[in-house]
Image (cartoon, rainbow, N blue to C red; front, side, top):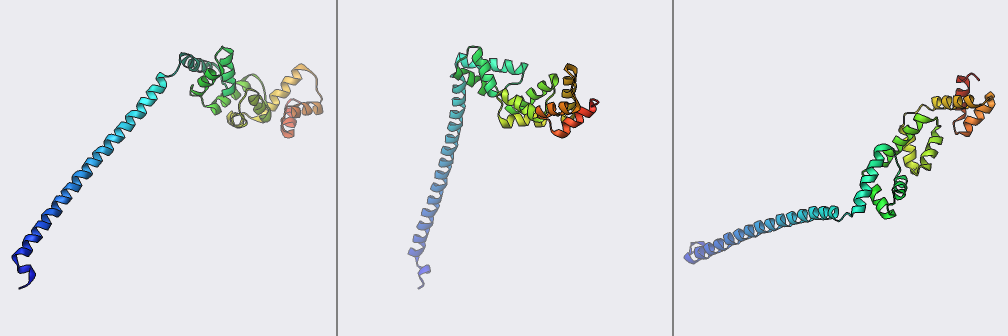
Length: 202
């Protein structure tokens, strides 16, 4: 008689099937438990991160808070470089550490501050492109920040040369060549200096 027709064969096969089904059920239950553990862990980590941020704000000293507040107040009035703002806060008797904290936490975009400062300079005086960059560097902006300010201020450098030439001619007499030399000394290009002299009747 074939083995699959024997009664004991089917009893054994049934027991094996029951064991396999029970095992699969246990795996799924374990998997669900693991998923629940993972979700709990993620929730705990997220909560811990939020608590750390809150703790960082809570740990801010009174002097640091005041430095941030003072830095923001200065930025409402004028454009500052990071180093320039730190020096201004030190002048207000903040320590170097608190002044640096104020500058670093006031939310300033230093490129935009350089642009803002560049525009304010152009409202009061005429500058060549390179002259404006050097003026911004004097205000403690980095080379890159100063170049950003000069590149995005919207200046017409020919017209800046004309304005500068006019201001010189209001103070003293210049020959055409001497005016061109003076403008080149101010770092206008030769072409810009010639343009300015011609526009001022020389």
